[in-house]
Length: 196
Image (cartoon, rainbow, N blue to C red; front, top):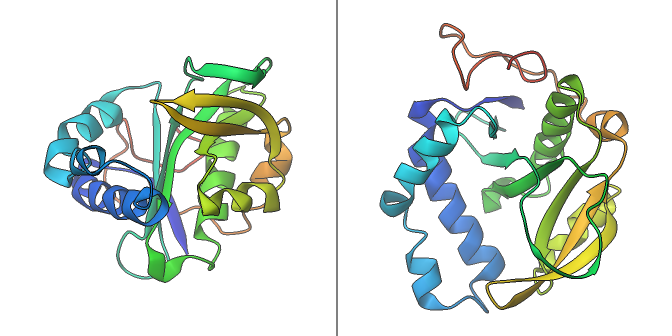
């Protein structure tokens, strides 16, 4: 299993995995027009902007030869919170998706752990993320120690926030060595947890 920072050439695969992940996790209750907006060709400009943004972190992971998953994160965003609090949390995972064929093989856990290692190395303290309340996959976050910290609404859909207050412990979930990219080190490339 390999995990590394994303590069420009990875973006089409990331956008495709993102769409498939949304269809799998949210297709049963997400409006068709919202899913249509996730089409990879429509999303590539956003992914390019996120890759160029130094406040964002995009990691990709592979079980085999192709990219099988990704995680996108950065600073904690504003949210419509109905109960609970995000006080003390200073980094957020915005999106985490893995191909269906690799789910259950530890890639999602490894991507979150690598993101936690990166943020711990840059002085961050606590990680959080939002998941739709009806998302059957949200139990995964509880399995890896996520604490329910808030409830909110995202575009009219109820969601919940999970948090981890110990980034070092969360980073310890990943026993997979991090693999550097082979091209020259520039923004978006390098060894996770060392670069940026």
